[in-house]
Amino acid sequence: MDNKLTKKTKFSFGIGAIGKDMVYMIVSAFLLYYYNTVLGISATFIGVVFMAARIFDAFNDPIMGIIVEKTNTKMGKFRPWILTGTILNAFVLYAMFNVPESLHGKGLLIYASLAYVLWGVTYTIMDIPYWSMIPAITDNAKDREDVSVIARMFAGFGSAIPTVLTTIIVPILGKGNERAGYGRFALLIAIIFVIAIIITVLNVKEVAKVSNKTNSVKDMVSALVRNDQALIVVVAIIVFNASLYLTQQLALYFFKFDIGHENYYSIFAAVGGAIQLIAMSTFTVLRKKFSRIQIFTGAVASSFFGYMCMFLLSCIGITHIVALLIAAAFIFFGFGLVTVLTTIFLSDTVDYGEYKNGRRDESVVFSLQTFVVKLASAISGLIAGVGIDIIGFDKDATVQSTATLFGLRCIMLIIPLAGILVTMLYFRAKYKLTEQRVEEIKEQLKEQTVEELKEQR
Image (cartoon, rainbow, N blue to C red; front, side):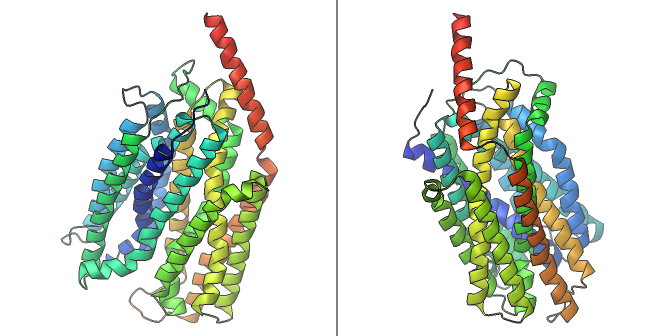
């Protein structure tokens, strides 16, 4: 089988990414600020809750991947869960940003904690089968790259919408009431989310069907653990994404209190989102001249250089928006390319896992992506939450101390610098699935399939 995908299928898949990443970004970039500054919850408490929820996901996400693998319906094994998870997550998102004003003290803390945990669970139900569909809708290498690029570009666009518009639309929707503004904006995003996923579910179908030798949960988990290349990709995603998420979570604090221009945040976010989309769109061009590993190395180096420039600019007092945006362009260009590449790398590890272990568990492998992206967000949230309290940030003060501002720069920029450097060194040393090796594996798998069919006859 070497089916070709239509443009309608490719773009319908990408549309779903717009909605789901709008949801993810409003939670990732603004929930800490909403819980801390709007609701008055301790930043350290929030960080601990974020991390505790991800520890829970360490068990929940792989289990969801296994559940998807064992699903067999007329709609396939992916789409029923994508639709169910979307509807549930949309309701939870609304509840999370519409905390009853009557709640205070322990009641508020319990509500906020449960809402965040439920959001993570329901997002998992939708996100794991969504990304798991890529290897199942085609085994054509070019189409896989196209789908990954389109989906990641659309996801970047979806992420940019709340990143750019939240600080603009919330005051408008709230009419001066920031709390009400966040609640109404969350409702709007939830509605768009459901519509976008319905388009995906109606137009994208799985066609690659591989029967596993066994449906044993033990066998699935064992095969996942033995897929060393998938685990290497996972570690790289965790460290790199946590670095960028830390910057995104503290960017609003940075521009409001350090730079002194809160409105710069929207410009920063808009340019960052646009640069990511540009980076993703250039991937196919870069692939004509460079290997995936070479592109990955260049992308990480770009982000590293951008972080260095932004830190130096802030330390020497250069706060002009153009200078900061140039530095940010390097950061987000690298992140955009890495985002596409990690999805492609994971798709390749599905074939590798089948070759090595005799099992093709798309959902179990891609459950790792969902888990590590949320884990990266939680790690950054924990560091940001605890860090804000350690540096002595005062949410009621309009002007912070010099020491507090320097501490903010270190958390937001220096820690990510170290993270992306570790990412590049680790990945280059451990990842072995070159394009040539992947093609060899695919050919061997086809030969095995032919031999199995002959034996059955």
